[in-house]
Length: 455
Ligand code: TRP
Image 1: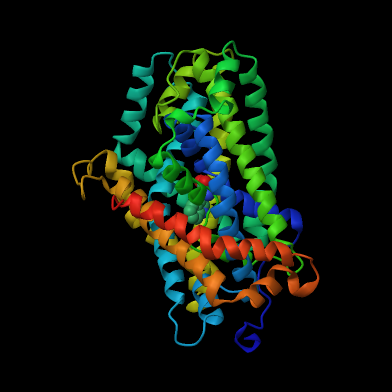
Image 2: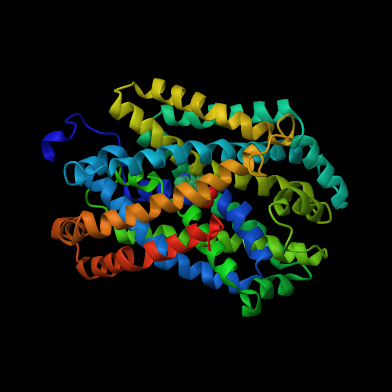
């Protein structure tokens, strides 16, 4: 194995703090602010939260540990890592190929939502889109989505920004940027929470988020929670394998993954604490779906003192969250192209940015010129979201769990998780292996079959 490793020094994260910032930067994203509060609102609040927590622990954490461990052990992109670690002749590397495909599909719609967030930073500065009348904020959102040029150009700006950061490398780009931005994210979010808790209906908002009501929990809710845990932790497509390949050898992977999980959860909860009291205070429904962020919240901000400043802070912190996630998505194909085809990093980044821009344009134009184009009733935007979240990620997740649990083998996994015996992680490795072998594949399989409407 050692002979196949590149001899030149590989770029990578330089400190424990850098590892944490970058990995947390990947996990924290639109999922925390755009998906989590909306799904929690739509699925009955605290009951959903509790099930999401279980899904994170039983499925998310083990698969995250597996991906990071595989990546660090192989010190290569996911395709190459799986080829190296699989028995000869077994095509496990295809899992890496599926992952790369998933990365492009996710980026196609994700970059467009990030583009909306950037546009809303601008709107916050202008003070437009701020109105206590939800009909007005809805019209403002519809006008943006319906304008093809605004949708396209803002998406290109997002891709240029992310590509520009990646050109600086793993340590100089990803680590340097996330190390500066993640603390700022927590600061801004904590500030919004303190403000939100002083509002009249803070208690109702908190009760909604933290007082479980299991009457609303059914099979569909459980499955949604598992799917969200997956998307949240950036697993199932090789992102964490890629980042694992940049981890330092002495990094304690289960500890790191646990910290990232807890911190990511904290961001989701803080986002909920910032949003729900405000929503309840002004009598809005928490079940507004994804329009919560772009339509309901501006209407809420309009009724608060310093509303324009609060809206600006909110959309800046959402941009920060989204940048770290986008970096980790784009890095996956970039690493494959540099290692597999030997492309210089800037060229690989250029190729990948262009390759995202093509399906990305389909998503950007889904609200305007392509609005009438439907596949199985879905717009191009919704199709990308559906295929990646409900098909490619779960398939990738099952296969990674099975690979780590059965193919790579207990001894190799235990050794890698324990850093060759220097860490006392053997007991933990057994627990993770049991989850990878018996629990995660089963749960993910059920989620996937349900997502496809088969059960
Ligand atoms: N975790 C990010 C979020 O919550 C999104 C993300 C980044 C992602 N990398 C990923 C999702 C890889 C799935 C797979 O917004």
